[in-house]
Image 1 (cartoon, rainbow, N blue to C red):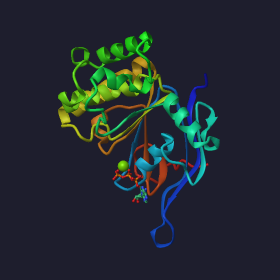
Image 2: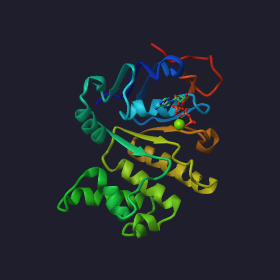
Image 3: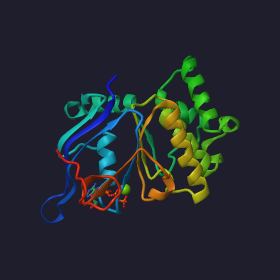
Image 4: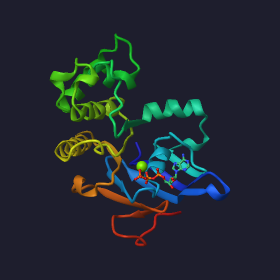
Length: 236
Ligand SMILES: Nc1ncnc2c1ncn2[C@@H]1O[C@H](COP(=O)(O)OP(=O)(O)OP(=O)(O)O)[C@@H](O)[C@H]1O
Ligand SMILES: [Mg+2]
């Protein structure tokens, strides 16, 4: 297994045309290693979510390549891309996006697409729910738990497929600061325990404390570190 789980090569993303043309990403290139806990920061409208959508294979770049686990995803058809996304990527959203009528456990099992007989998935999901502190809540319906508990469940759901990368866009954006702190600590401890790569977009850099790496996006361009650019622009 290669140590590099993600390689972005010269990513450009343009929305609209003529007067409404926006270059949301401008020649972004960087690599991410297995186990890295990486923050993406930058002001509103700088291109963070657009970048995360490229990495998450939710949208395609206008040009450039997204390599995940050594595979060039640019060449994959739409159906192959969703298959690849489901097997390689885990997602945590700002709003936990749980299915309200399913239990916490059923929600965590969803990405596994399992049948009842898949005891492995069941055991792994319950182990994850224990690890995120939801052992006593797993048979509750998702609409009956608190925001913090729902986000814990979303973390377990994001991990249940053993993804190559977990992606999160403002995962604490909807939580009070105390709950946000526990969710941050939980993601960091799961990352360590599982040697799991996390790529997290946040506007609250301080909330995360010490992390492996920070990339700053400014006007669609990526810079290493959190100092004001231009320090070290990441391009090909
Ligand atoms: N689907 C779209 N169509 C047109 N323009 C878009 C689209 N998505 C994003 N943009 C534009 O691309 C730029 C980057 O947007 P993006 O959502 O990536 O910013 P962001 O850094 O995530 O901002 P925020 O911190 O507010 O979430 C903005 O100028 C935005 O208006
Ligand atoms: Mg955004």
